[in-house]
View 1: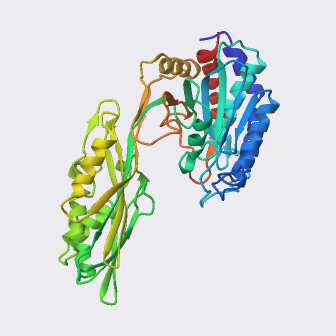
View 2: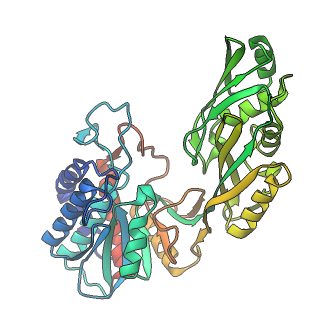
View 3: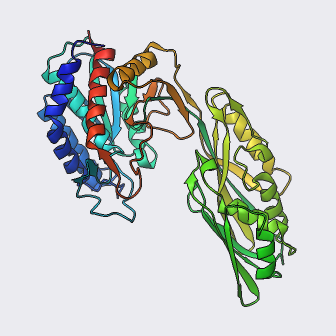
Amino acid sequence: MNDYKKLINDYIEEHTEDMISFLKELISYRSVQGEAEENAPFGKENKEVLDRFIAECEKFGFKTENFQGYAAHADMNELAPKLGILCHLDVVPEGTGWTGDPYKAEVRDGKVIGRGAIDDKGPAVMALYAMKCISDLKIPLKHGVRLITGCNEENGSEDMEYYRKKTEFPELLVTPDGNYPLINIEKGMLRCEFSADMPENCALVSLHGGSVINAVPDRCTARVKDTSPEEIAECAKGIENVKFTAETEGNLTVITAEGSCAHASTPEQGYNAVTAMLRLLDDISADTGVPVSVLNSMFPYGETDGGSAGVKCSDDISGELTLVLSVIDIENGSISGKCDCRFPVSKTLSEISENLCGAFEGDNIDAQIILGVEPHYVDSDSEFVRSLLAVYEDVTGNKGECIAIGGGTYVHETENGVAFGAEFPGEDNHMHGADEFITVDSLKLNAKIYANMIIALAGK
């Protein structure tokens, strides 16, 4: 594809240990969002890891600018930047289940293991070394390249809101914060919350399920009068893939539903304990209240396409809409809940919002949109996208094609941004989970792809 491919391969191989060493250092910062301080809007350690990354960029001879701790960028030459590479250095909390210290990265079985290894500190390191490779090899460019690093991708991307108030993104923008071959479509997202009064003297005393709006809930618990564990067991027989247990607590029956979790963008991969519980409650002989019946009708167990809520739609390039009832709480005579919707590029936020809120009307349930984002789409036939796919094919030998996702990446609300890497097809790097990792081979291959990308998009 270009005359520098072998030079790039050799350079990255020679600098692999340097990449690993720097990645291990970055992982040592617990850059989870913390309390805001001066020039540290997302916490002290987020500022420290950003400062450390920028110091390394400066050591490599790149010109840098720090935007009050929200974000920073590094330019690899004096030319006006046409290509931007967007990474983030913040991470999600470590959680449980690790076999080692999440912030003392180790190389084990060919993997660099630690929080942020794949999301997104490893990709930030490979992007930096791709730029250093082009710079050190003195490969001529006709456009500038800018590496942009933020510190708030995991908690709302306020970093990029601030950054864009201070400067503009380059014309072409890629983020190694997704999947290969290339993500050019990200569905729109809508989040809704609702509330209602429960009828007096209904049999349903309490109901709690789900904790986060962007996940299929895997557990739900209800406390009900006027029924028995035997009746619950009989009604539960027809509800597949969710385990129900029931036991007596005084004059109440406590029911627990256990399903399986999934991301709200792929709800078909989970089993929704909340909607399964609503179906059970609507089936038993006791009066559990009109709101339960309404929600059971709108969000029937096993349905993920929004058909019963009147929002079902799809298109050929981004697939079908998904709708998840993800959080529900009933206590002290009131009900509240939240749902998550991902919709295709053929629809607008206003269309889906109107239809979904309209589905609640007439049943004394108040609903309002709490978050809405339009779909993101970059033409698959653009020269930009075709160039990236050609690089992927040339370096990996695998077929390059565009993919659409229900989730959102760091470039969702940009004009011309795509996700290009860093996870390869079939990989499971335990992102956001215990023992998150990136393989050494993947780190190297990513760096080679990005170095070749720089030549393809900015080279002479």
